[in-house]
Image (cartoon, helix red, strand yellow):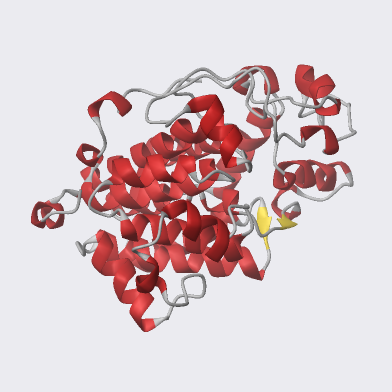
Length: 336
């Protein structure tokens, strides 16, 4: 939780906290990802406060409506999971183990590893690793691939250069690497603006468009202030009062007394679109700044795109307070 000691954290502790928090937030929500029927979520899981396996049947899954046609080896990013895209009730992450991360967070792990190894962010090195991971679905074992990945490979198949394959996007999944990558670069000695520029360059590999750029910039503003030692609640509360973030406006502080599943569901949708998902993320991180555990459990239980909201909430909490703000039973080397 936030405390005066949080301002004395080392750069390495902040970077480790941001990464660990992102992985925790995603892994905790993974079995309940994209449950829009909260009665079904509660009936299936009770309260999700520990790592669980995905259930055999996902009652809200619309995977059967998604498609990706290419089967040439260099463009086949579905592999053995392809037949499940035509079936109803298939869980988006049906193969993953309790505590394992979804594909998007495995990609976050990949870029962090590359940066730690080289001491810098290199877009070409990440693109090479990205292509290798997506072309080996049997290794990451995740069933669902978001539109950004499918669109990227469709553009690649059309003959575009990899650095020009990003698609216009407005989903919160594109924000998963923002805080962990920013923190890792700062820990390696990057100044604030070069770190921000590298994060924007990284997100733009797969996500293009004004909405995602605006969301990335909002998140970087918050991350920069946390890096400087400000407390999470103070940072987000200040922006709520000033109304100076694109994706955190309205009478935020008046909502605090209302149940989370009312605020995230009525005020902001539980869906993945940035105009609702990022404000909901900021809200839960602000309201529960003194208890990242409560923030992440509540995030799971309000449903919808809780994996990606959780990754951002966890990253903000970990950047602010380090790995120690999370329950010990949630902190372990993530697999997969």
